[in-house]
Image 1 (cartoon, rainbow, N blue to C red):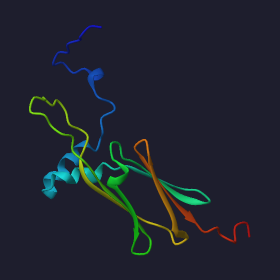
Image 2: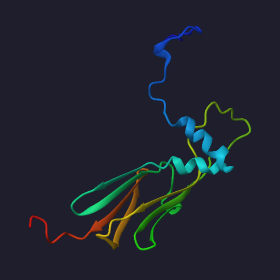
Image 3: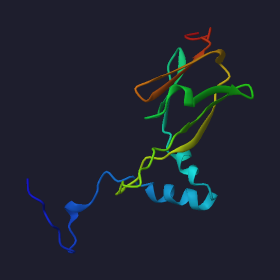
Image 4: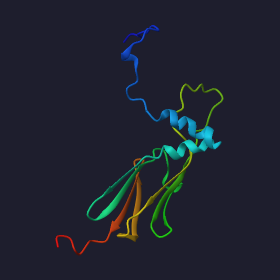
Amino acid sequence: MSIVRRSSVFDPFSLDLWADPFDTFRSIIPAVSGNSEAAAFANVLVDWKETPEAHVFKADLPGVKKEEVKVEVEDGNVLVVSGERTKEKEDKNDKWHRIERSSGKFVRRFSLPENTKLDQVKAGLENGVLTIRACTMLNAYIGA
């Protein structure tokens, strides 16, 4: 393999097509809030789908331990996922080239629909993915 050196001439193949378009906004968040941990709030990505039986939430939490995550229902029907991603220990001899993974506290809130069985909310963390399942009451009038 050889190293290719690029000149200062515009080269469309040198563009990072997988760059995050919101990267600029995430870098502004800590400056606006004055809290460097605020960047972690924007980085917890959650998928929410509804099946006939439940609402299913999946959150990417790589490197977060089960003990560092809290899942609760507050104010009657608000699902709250919170926790903290700890910062990696730094060695004085290390020379960092890029830091993209965030650390700090995070929280996400979701209003659950009225048909949610709040006593049947279950959560599990496996392979860095938090899965929350909130069962729903079956509608007796389906098909009627």
